[in-house]
Image 1 (tube, helix red, strand yellow):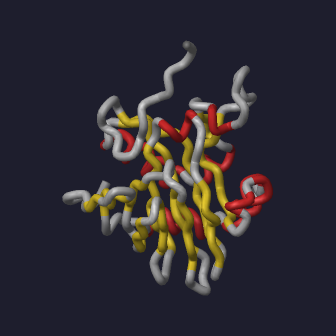
Image 2: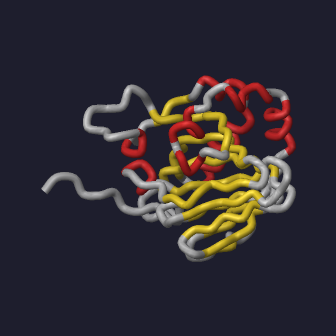
Image 3: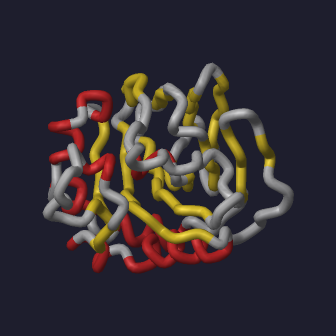
Length: 204
């Protein structure tokens, strides 16, 4: 992770690094424009994400295990077919997870369409509860405003942030150009998480 420095922390956000070398990741994206339309399930099925397009790199393991209501309760992840087209993006996620003494979970490249938003929501479920969510900003000409729990930051290109996705949150793209983030989750070692919560007790 380049230029980590001292994390800039708030109640809902922590800037982990800045001036990350994103050029190789952008080259991967530019070489595979067709991948944005390869899987449209997220924008079709998740209403708050309907103005986004995404490329899954790591996704929930399927079929869902017995007792799981949906993917939000599934801890196991698998490599998605698109991962082979983005080895540098995947390697970045793996490297950050290792440096944070954490285990990599799901990962996806997400573009938010111009002049649109991700609508307010909470990332609920057993999977999200125990993990930290990270954003690496790849393309965002005017910055990426993200609000969580009443706190707002503007993320800039080349910055890596963690934020409390267990709080109600939403994102805006005020630009006339698409905003692209690499978004991934890490399972921290006990006591090492930034916004991860303890697992819920099972049974009586």
